Image (cartoon, rainbow, N blue to C red; front, side, top):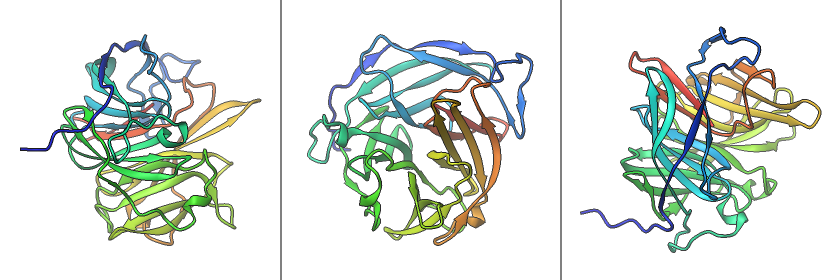
Length: 300
C-alpha cells in the first residue's frame, strides 16, 4: 500500500468558463496561424479567493486531466471538458496549498512562488511532479495522486550560479525530455538570466548533475515555460511586456538533436502574437497528443 499523502487545505472549487471563440481579434474565420491551428480557448474565473496567478500547467495524455500551479496560492487540478475538439469548461476542480519538505504550508511569497510544473514520472493519477520556484530558487519533486499534490520528497541539485538569478526571474520553465539523445533528463530555463553574450541560460540535469546550455535571446522576450514533445524536441513559450505596447507572446520549436550540454539553442518561431490576438500574460505551456497523433499545445 502507498503511504498516505501529506496535504493541506485541499478544497473543491467551482471554475466558470467563458469561451474564447477567435484568436485573431479582427477575424472570427481565421483558424490557421503558421503550423498551428486554433482549437479554442476559455476565459476562466472562480469565486474562490485562491483562484488565479497560474504560471505553469501539465495536461495528461488523455487531454482532460490537468494540474496547474499558481505563483500566489498553490495548485489546481481538474478536468478539461470538450465540445468535440474545442474546450468548453472545467470540471472536478480542487485547489490545495503548496507544502515544504516537513509538510508545512509554504505561506511566505518567497517560498511558494511556483512558476513551472512538469510530470517527472508516472501519471497525474499516480506520479511525481517537478515544480520550479523562483525567489527562493529551487526545483522540487512532489507526489501527485488522483489529482492531489502532496509534500515534496526532495529537490534537484541547484546549478552553480542559480543563486545569482534575480529574485523574480528564476526557474520559469521545467520539463523532462520525452525522447532524443538525453531522454528522461530534466531541463529548465531561467525567466531572464543572460550570459556575457546576452543569451538566456538553461540547464540539463544528466545523472543528477546540472549542465549549462543557452537559448538565443530574440527581441528581449522572457522565457515563461518549455515542454518536450514525444521525440525530445522542445517548445519554448516566451513573453514580452512593455507599458506602451502591452504584452506579446512567442512559441519556438527546438529540434531534439540540438538539445545537449553547452549548446546555444535557437529554433524556429512557430507563432508570435501581440495584443491584436486574444492573449494575456501567457506563462504556462502543456503538450499532449490528440486522437489522430497531432500535437496539442495548451497555454495558460
